[in-house]
Length: 249
Image 1: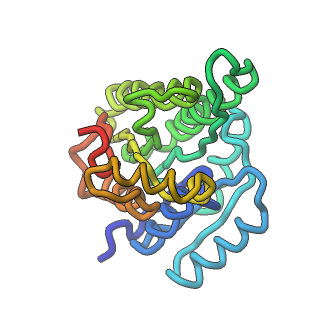
Image 2 (image 1 turned 135 degrees about the vertical axis):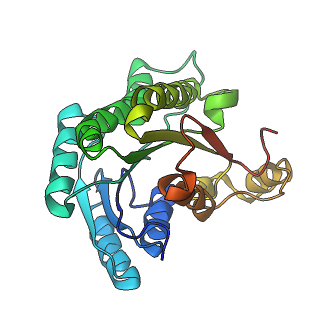
Image 3 (image 1 turned 90 degrees about the vertical axis):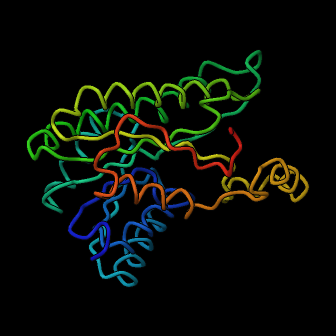
């Protein structure tokens, strides 16, 4: 039996990078996959077909802005109507708007906090009632090593990701008695479309600073999500799992 067989997962921001990697791994472990996307309709429909054809599961994408509370409620309701239930929520939607604090605009601050942190509140709040009713559920929040150690030029991003860790611990304490678990994953340097723009020399220097001497892959993060979404982690909640090659040892 596959680790996520008979489970339904909802993943925010899944048409590229880490989110797409999670969707693919969840599908390979037997989960039906619902996912949200902000704008890339073509990529979403392509991912639906890819997941269904390659893994024989049900997949559907929903255009939804996770930073908007009403849209998050609508998303959860639509997924419940189409899939019948939700077992796993992955709050993965995230953006960067990097700038030194002295140059950072209020808009850059608000956009990152709303997309990265407020979205986690929105989706978790929306999914609480069905999780409480079924007395089960796993919530996985995608934070970052930057939320633990900070980073110059990323005060907004670091604040949003640090906030997710505190949010995770609080939700775990509130919902644990109902068999609802909440954990976070803190990826380190993960090779995605965004990091490809940094240049070969930058990528090499970053990799050399990591004990495992390489950047991570979306699959590395997705494997951790499979663990936290499956029954293998039934006694784990309120934790932050670092997937960083040893960066923060």
